[in-house]
Image 1 (cartoon, helix red, strand yellow):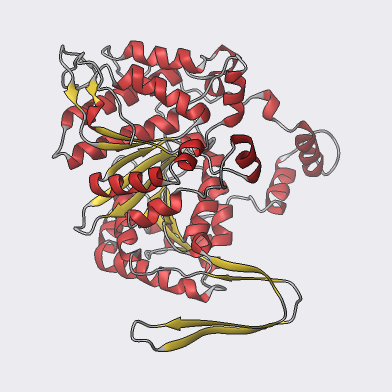
Image 2: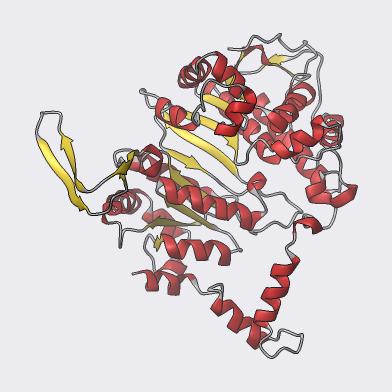
Length: 497
């Protein structure tokens, strides 16, 4: 654990309404685990904690852990195990993006080994149930989805926990389950006729799907300001028969505890009055089509990982998606670990170290920080002062972004640098943070990120008569060809059955 001098007792008062008033004495922040990463995101969060949090809260009760590659190597990963133990004890965790070193990075950093991703240890140590990933919305800014999109990714099982052996030759593979009573059951057996095979074994736990279902359906019911969103369960059970158990468990919980509530809100009118199921192939298409938002999806571990990446790209980028690992203590108390859905932004950090200006949008990280602080406040018995502070600070961040005082990914060349944006937000704390008055804005797409050759090729493909104009008929034919034509939800579900 990192030792850290407590923040100076500068003080703050409870934040109420739209105005944040700072008092003369700092309040202790509730206990929380803070996991440090590295590169650009660590640099940015160091500044944010120093300028946004420390002047208003004494964070001496936070427990800090350094999960940089160098520290993991130096401690033989004891820092990771200590962080997991602290998270299990405290229950509220914020994690900066971390690096899982490659073979090249191992040599560059002088590491003893290529340490694996810390996420598996965290999910196991915190009895992970689901990873909730939702779109982040900013009032006054047009992003990919108009209404919230909620996602639950089963936190355990599947390919991520697989055991394997590569280079297996011809022969027979037998998978055997040994029960607690010693009885053996053959799960699968097959003949291998190739000279070179990779043999993989994994399982999908079903016991905690009930907890996932309650978490998912309860969230979807009150999302979008209490109006609710339509919940979908996503599997490939038509082909992968072992996925049927996930669907059955989800539907049993829904029918017994939530169906009547969803019917009362009219949320099942477009899906035939029942809990809708989507084949994962269809889900990939609907995520692109349903840009109106207002839906939720729950899926297995791997499918959830891939589909939430797609949601992030439609909505803007991984920086506009939050990520929360939901676990459970033995006594039933919920553990929540908050993090951004993006990496350490190594290329920007390299530019910073060369002395160049950078402009990192920290939205995903600060939303995670606010979420972790709010959960720590709940675990501390309901610290409304903390939750008022994070709500006020969130409004300031959003207002700056909408009013042209955001980073350059949002505001173009006139946008602020990393440091300027952090300073701008810090200067607004304690002032009126009523909603922004600027007209709705759209994030600025960087010209350098556009593939002109691909755009020209797509245009020529859609312009079937070659007259340099795409009319409605050509657009419709092109969207059908690309499998992107809008289709009503109910037709999609009928095609799925």
